[in-house]
Image (cartoon, rainbow, N blue to C red; front, side, top):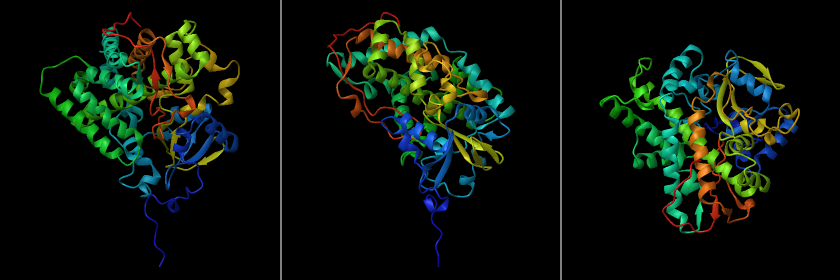
Length: 422
């Protein structure tokens, strides 16, 4: 008797032979991999997310705008994902924390999305940009002070991976210990590996405790306070899930944005000379980093709501679509004139996505990242990489590209450290 292959086996859906997505995001130069895929197969390519589970990787600018803006053809609700409904995605799959259904604004469309987004937008509007800049300046100086007298550091584990979590913890009402616990949970979640679901569960536990503690206390006019008290959120689950994209996606994307801007400072002579010399401002440097290394290199997910054609490929109802934000910059449509990467101030990148689901927190995120990068420039002016650039490796994830480490050396600096405003 012939036995049916188990969920996750390539025999289920014919993913054998498809390029694994993680082989692109984890490559030394992911853009080379994306360009080769585009040259061979066009702007929309089928890739393997995990053994037995496939998705369409959208790398074309026009195609990506179609997927993000046309809610008649493509939706966010993972309950439309055919492979999930057909049992091809194992219940313990590391993909589910990023691609499984949640009752929040990232998984809703139309009026339901607008209802869930309003509390988030109103919460973000309470953020005092100047206050968060001052707080992050002090945090950055404190972190640099921890290793300044040593003359060496890892700018990922000792800096870039800490700042967003602690900044967000403060914004949302968590203490420093809670922020560190949050960071560990999110690192597991975004890896989409074997510990991803455990990280997801811990993340939810932290947010449930936060919402319950605030619901029973005095009203505070901050992001969490607005969301907890908002009349358009109808349950504990909706309130918790409204915090998920703000804290979860915000932490990972800011870590990546800081890391890649610092990596370019350390590895690209032109970028470094212009930024250190002042001909490239910090904000322009941040935009160039977004062009070259979007924080979400590949963004999950949209699901086809009907059979359609996209980029020369026949898309079936229920197919998963993942957005190749790190590939779009090399679309010939984006290079009709000057190199967009070389145009200071060019913000036409899609690093914050597009359409109704574009990032709601791009302004406070930029404040935090600008402050983190500017503080390094101010306090460690002779910073240099302590290993060859080609030895840098990447944390495993099909979605983000964060260096495993950025080992650096610099002239020792004595405490106390003060910033001069960034």
